[in-house]
Length: 374
Image (tube, rainbow, N blue to C red; front, side):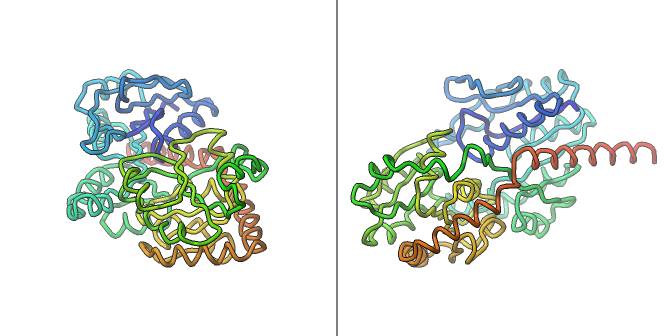
């Protein structure tokens, strides 16, 4: 199968869309298919040797106020890449700007399209603009409604899409690397460096941006015997360093180093209420770490409240603090939640999830063939 993956982000970018697009391309190549990726050019067009297939970069500009996010400019390279690859199917990863152009190009060529919903753009509009949710949904609906199939990463996302009139939606969750992320990487020396007085290590991993609401960890920072560790970077970092006194900011970490940090946490806390999936929750669970997360979006599918972690009301700093306090007071509960979390995700490999995706491609192609015969 020849697949063109049109993605709004790709490594060396570090975010959920980029990671999922990379894993998708890697799995397709591993299964003997032929992928090509089309993505916005990065700053300086830095190469990334992790790509398992050709990557076509289109011109882009940084998003004003958030230089780590780049927006693709109109370019003939996209349509040329789809045509030259002789694609059987076009895969749109979190389509909005480049993905919308990919949808138009595929429609002109009569090619089937699978669109993967990954980003709560309406929630982002509310956070950054205080308005614009309806416009964001109109844009999303226009792209996804034109696709042969839309794949939602969680039950909450699927319900949102259907409630906003997007047809032909199915569930496709994300995989997690349970070999890289594992409890055995817990590092006593790292823990001593992060918490020299033996504090409970509470971690957040992700972008430092307004929609993530990392400032909700302020109450946890004030708890005696707790050390908050923040992994990631973004425009909110300077303000968060003021809002979270005593927290350790490690900046961006990836790969095996990130896996060692995850395994060395005592509790993982995610604070953002706009997650369509929330990959870092799965990575914490794979690392055997209990999770505190908002009862909204993707975490509702991932965290079994009272078994693998605690779900708290979104945007509630006191609830985050109280959940951390409860886990800090009960080492046995932390161990039980961590072990249960690891057991829960052990079958959620990228290979298993990737095979489900290939099955969705096959169904879409079969539907096109049936339509032609009819």
